[in-house]
Image 1: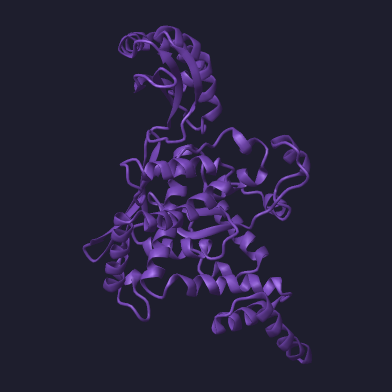
Image 2: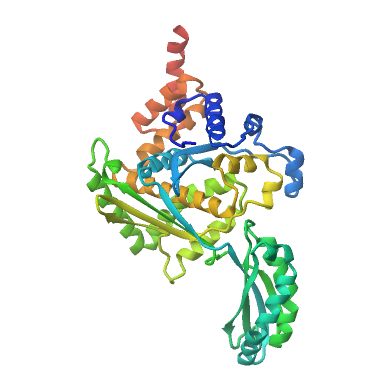
Length: 433
């Protein structure tokens, strides 16, 4: 299968679906065309929605797309995205094309989540820490007996680590015990929370304190993905800017983010544009990944960029490292056919591959944003796509969408009133033909 589909965005929707089905069949995957048709209604029945959350009154659809041109760890991948913001899919596809000569390479850690068991009102925290360390092997064995099938598959509780938080204060002595759990292909929130609740009272007795909160942390610094790419200078160049100049400008923008948390926040938002779009499409808890990403960015005490760019020999080196707690079993995947279809489109069977795909999308959207900032400015490309949405909202259809959007972008006044003025003027011309 190839993800290199030139002109894909110009094709009618029906033709795009046909091409994707062909690409899937070429890789030996059976992608049911009827699944595509379900996407027209969001891929989710009202009955299924009512079983997922409370107080359901309907379903809410987002555009479902694929980013193309991606090569990840030597394998071409179609990257599913569900997102409302114009330019994200186009930006990811364009950046993937620039990085395509070497593609994106990834490393994923073991899928280890951390559960926290808080113990408060500990009278002697030093004795408690010693006792907990001594009982750790037995507590860990208890935890493993609670998940025998997961342990048989190579997962389950791996370590138990007490940490001293406070010697005194309004809650007395406070200790937190971290339970490290290999969740395999599950995101693992329910699993980890269940284990924490099962161990809490026993741990509190050992520490001679009171059991407090018992829940996972979303700072999953033991479950990360690292993504790298090299972009040759000639792939960075355009009609105006030489590749070496673009490379240096991107590196300067990266250094800016490393120095300034105000810039780093927007730098990281550009990463999450790609990551979140993949996670939403594949039915993940994208809010958990967002929380973990931003906490990880601040782990040194200063908020920093998750991705950095450096000048290499004849090109640009990029590296992203961030927490990535995702799963290919459980959660919304049981009920949402579009989420299952998204995994099928990407050829994803296991959580580590899904993390790699999401991470590559994040590094790609970051590259695209920095390149735009370093050259023409972010607004030119973004507003051109935004103009299409404004044109449609004003009532334009068919070929008039592009004509109204082109005039809006050219005048720089991308507003509904101006779109309606342009459409009113163009409609008589179209009808006379």
